[in-house]
Amino acid sequence: MLEEKLKNIFEKFEHGSEFYAFKELASGHINDTYLILTKKKPYFVLQRINHGVFKDVPGLINNKVLISQHIKSKLKNQLKKDLDKHVLTFAKTKQDNAYFKDELGNYWNLMYFIDESLTFETVKDEEVAYEGGKLFGEFLNLTDDFDAKKLIEVIPNFHDMSFRYSQFQLALQSSSKERLLQAAECIDFVTELKEEMHILQNLKESGEIKLRVTHNDTKISNALFTKDNKGLCVIDTDTVMPGIVHYDFGDAIRTICNTAAEDEINLDLVEFNLVYYKAYTKGFLEKIKDSLTPLEIKYLPLGAKTMIFIMALRFLTDYLNNDIYYKIKYPEHNLNRAKNQFKLIHSFAKKYDEVYLVDC
Ligand code: GN1
Ligand code: MG
Image 1: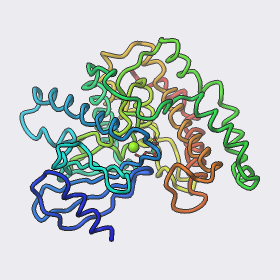
Image 2: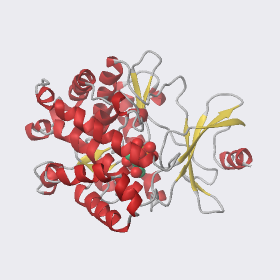
Image 3: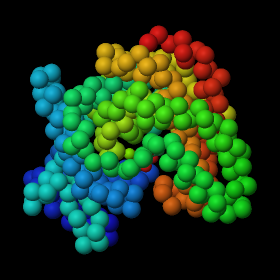
Image 4: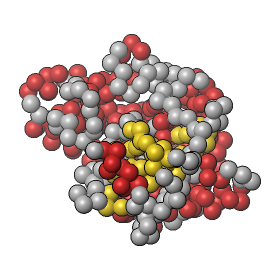
């Protein structure tokens, strides 16, 4: 029984709390995540890291712990109270490890739940977009002086466009005729945008845009807010590794500026919200502008387009591969996610001129 299993795993960790009940937190596409309710707060978040996707789980967990420690040591000087609400805290096992490996070879890690925090799957309020910008900008700011060599590359070539295109080409070759047919319109679009979608990759490879520590999964549901919509804490640090600023700027825009959820099937509801773009960009730049070069700033809008596109491409590739990567709830789920993201790019493209007018 799942409850019994989670209780047993929870008890492998050092926390001095008693298991009471659990709730699945089902918004992620890769790991299994559970809220552990205890008889007396604090509550916890217990997570099984998907070792099919993440090949070096101990390395990944070490990344997360190091980044949290770094952020904590910096925030200590800035905050007078509530430090533990602004950065994740990981529990150790009774054997003093940062993770527990069960008899089936699954890796588990445990975090303290940040009480009275909220998450959003979609944004309904300009202030949340602004606060999200500040939060993700501040994350980059706080990790700017962290030695990226201490981090492993959790998923090699994660946001590498050439790599994602080559995976897509392979999927085209092995896909069923039926799926190719269903996805025909999306496939054409991928080909059309190929050149533009490699611009940032090329600037990264030539060294014109520098590598820094990036979060790499800055969707809005990976930000915690207070009840009055103030940014609190960046979560899901699984994919922290070296990257370029455009990854984090763009992935947040992808989710904040979509007027619908990432898998909404009624594409009439999917529009790019320019007001939220402006609010997010304002917050983000307030925190990080001083450490960005003019070239990095110039390419932020393209960063947004590129990150929406790369997610569309990855969802589409997984659909063509018969859904081997992302969790799905029904057979066309990945295709619908891809269509949704392509619709967002179309809507964004119509507003592109105005995006460039946003005062940076
Ligand atoms: C995955 O598992 P989750 O929801 O944190 C994916 C991200 C995508 C995201 C799309 C390791 O993140 O890259 O942006 O789905 N993570 C991995 O919602 O592939
Ligand atoms: Mg993630």
